[in-house]
Every structure is written in structure tokens, then in C-alpha cells.
Length: 226
Image (cartoon, rainbow, N blue to C red; front, top):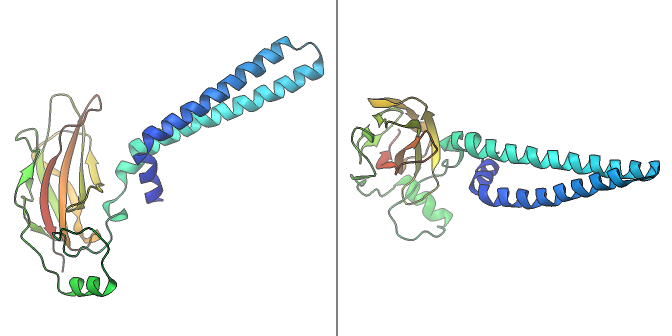
């Protein structure tokens, strides 16, 4: 179900637009049925009009339910999906410039004897005393369960989350989140054994209490589990 939830979250604006257009037709049908029911003279005519009104009302409630379901999935379910849900594929030479498909033979050869370049040691978007990851440090090699240390604290704090993606991609997956400010302390744990060895971006995202996200703090790290 993970890919379905992620697709619903990715196309959230388009889904809302489609549901809004659908709701306009439904409410128009409800209004017309209600007017027919009010203006009906004969009992049979009123019965038919009432049946149409009940049907239109049921459809309107269904559309409203879909709106709430989409909001819940996009806001709570999709961001909480584990990273392994989309990152359980082998990572070979992540610094190669082509992004095309490789043959199974080459994939096997690279997996058995990977060629790893130095991990980028810089970071971006990090702000001391507000939004920063201090451990692991950029360019570190990690394994097992990693304790993340850093700061996620602003005056109008809302919540923070930390996410991971393969180096060179933008397919971010949420590892975990927190609803209390953290200052130079433990942000949470990250079980790297759920991912294949390779190079990744790790980012810390901070959102204020009105839903505005700051520029994330991003560092590059390498997973090297036995």
C-alpha cells in the first residue's frame, strides 16, 4: 500500500481539484432535486424527487469522505511511511552520471565489488541553534542503529522530521518525526539495516506552527553495514 499512499500524497492538489469539480455537479443535482421536491404537487412526483435528493445527498457525503481521506493520507499516513518502503533496492555506483538502466550482469558485478567515491563532506540549509544535524557529521560512514543528534528549535515551533533518500535522487522517505523542540540533543534513532549499503542524503525538516517548512538541513552519509 505504500506506493499508493505516496501517489495520493504526491498528486494531492490534482485530487482536490477533481473532487471539487465533482462536488459542484453533485451539489447542483442536490439543489435541483430539492426544488423539484418542494414544487411537486402529486405524491408520486414528490416520491421520485425525494429519491433523487437522497441519492445526491449520499454521493455528496461520499465526496466529503474522500476529501477527508485524502487529507489524512497526505498529512499523516504518507509522511510516516518507513524509509525501507521505497529504498530497499541495491545501491551501486551512485556517483555515475548516467541515470539509465543497467544490465543484470553489471549490477551483479558492482554489487560484489562496488566502487565507492568519497562521500561529500558538506551540508546545506543547516542553521546553528535552529536547524542542524551534528551527529553523524557530513561524510560519515554509519552502520546499525544510528543515534541522530542535533537541533530543531524555533520560536514558533510546530514539528520536525528526518528523511533519507539515495544520493542523487529526490525520492525522500520519512524515517521518524518529533513534536517537541530539541536543542543539541537526541533527535531520534535511525535503523540503517533496513537499507542497502551505499550513499544517501539525510535531511532534517522543521515546520512551524502554521505549516510553513524551513529550508531543510541536508548532509550526505554512507551506510556500510556488515
